[in-house]
Image: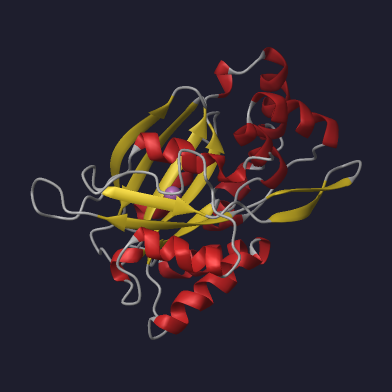
Length: 266
Ligand code: NI
């Protein structure tokens, strides 16, 4: 069985490079917790198109002993997702979503299929695919067209394959017991949180409370110009015991639906 840790570390470094806020936030919590900040999950995005369906993105994780968890549907955003977890519960869960491209307009489908066709299958066979960025040329006009239909489509087209977010496990923090106190620390330090559906998504009763920063912005190169667009964000998760007395280990679709909006342009 392959060791997943080098891949997780490479993904983390790739993520920090695009998201300087995440480094500052990680350091802030590390300082208060003897240097230890545990990651609850990593989120990855893809298109529901062969050969890059979410099952293909999951391959290196499955090869390292990860197991498929629950499936999730996000009708309005035209997404499907699945989470994967490792029997070694010190390893983060991996939440992979895919955009149901065939539910978009003919025009958007045409743009996205044109992008996916440019992916070299040899690149997909590498474990590094999950942080390999964009495999296609994209003009700014096409980005704008996708943006009008789907924030997710535009994000994927502009940024390609890379972690969309990492997630601080509040259960493993000594410094904070509640999500409210984490949010207060973040806001006092000047970070902007996603307020869609309220700052706190979920409740103790359903087993999971989550919040997130709004994504950092970065200059991204298109084939005809550069533009500043939202990149990646940091999430905070507090898991609660459910009926069997164990901490809930799944995800809550209604909350994830709002977390997706952390990369919205407006
Ligand atoms: Ni998440």
